[in-house]
Length: 334
Ligand code: MG
Image 1 (cartoon, rainbow, N blue to C red):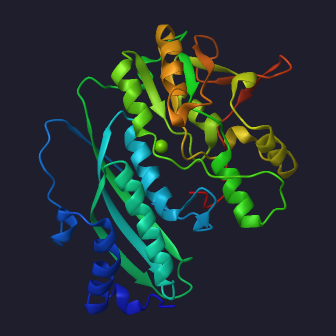
Image 2 (tube, protein in one colour; image 1 turned 180 degrees about the horizontal axis):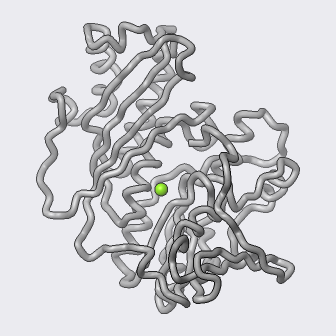
């Protein structure tokens, strides 16, 4: 099997060949094909939205996805939760000398397929190769650009007591898939990352609702951390109901002996939405009618009590404060 050589990152003939045979071949679009130093994008009469994310997940291939799919969905979801229509991506790769070109191609095909499904083009990129031992296989940075309609302006400053908090489905699936893939645990249930682009569902919500206050994807740090981010330094608090948190029993059982709290596990196809009380049921039914929202729930509300804090009402009726995640629970989860 052919391997990546240092020369593939030299900028010379090998680089040229790799770019043509792998990247341009699969990302295939007229802007990238020009191979200019920068991509010139068509003018749009909407606000440009811009984000970046670097992906270092281990292992590179896992049930439900791979680093390529994750590098596309992760960045597109950060645009999507702003209400922005994702349009363009860059792809920067740092590859370890000796990496199998077949694996690189699998990753690139996965990126191309995922972007294609979302009608997003990968229009510029960069490849660096570093000596064996200097990185673990491959790291991928993607920068995303999208467009935001003037009518959409989410912000935590709009949160008010009574607003309802929704999530589009089961939590903890991505982290559980990565942990089991990494540790080779002997477990009797199927784990699969929830890795998915959520824009198609978000677009339905932004089209049909008038009072979305904020959205965010609970990736690293999980549900509990994202909820804390919403109310940190705000004059409102959050109260959620443990019974309403969508989570598979198997994931709970999986977490317990490992000492993980599923509320802090990373997700890659979930987003939390806070809407005005009067639109909560409509938001829920829109979610439930979409593939990515079958297990959606209203899991809590914004409160005037406990400003800055997230309170969990447990299944036995007691309450406890949910803090942000402290430290790193699982390195290289995304
Ligand atoms: Mg995010």
